[in-house]
View 1: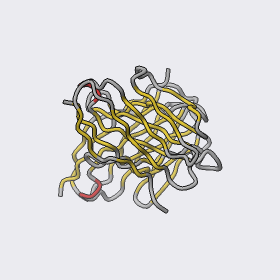
View 2: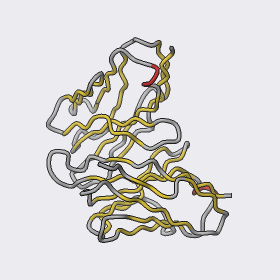
View 3: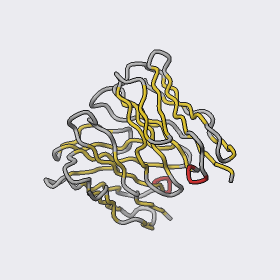
Length: 115
Length: 112
């Protein structure tokens, strides 16, 4: 079974630009969560989508947004990039059923560098 | 507000030793707790998931325990190997549909 995939793996952008990251969950998983990881703040939750609806949201400004498609693939978008947005962005999928309800499986991440 | 702490932030031990990594959380009312491993610059690999009703879970050389009343979980690694070198993260889910809360991790280095 293929794992969680994220594209692109690396991105370099300049301040003020916008960026879109993509995540494909494990087949059969309908929940997708996004996280930002930085050396200073560690792993912070951005948002979670299930069946194309946002279920949970972290404490990030409105420049961070996401969506989920009917095939469970998800995208996150960051507008008006700032230097502090440089981070590893991780996506995780889970199956909201059974004993392993909401066990998170992570993708390899997208490394975003803002210059 | 649930907070998750992992101490120490870094640990070095000689190869072959058994070791324990610690995770503490402030609110004992949790749904589950998950241990992850992260290699430098990579994503997270799920190691063990412990449900609120469970006391421990085992996978190979790894054993994770959960004591909700004291707000603690430990990850025991037997017969450590250089390949175990990584950052180990503990994550708590307060309620079934709540967002997951991560500790800052323990960076483990196994000395050959």
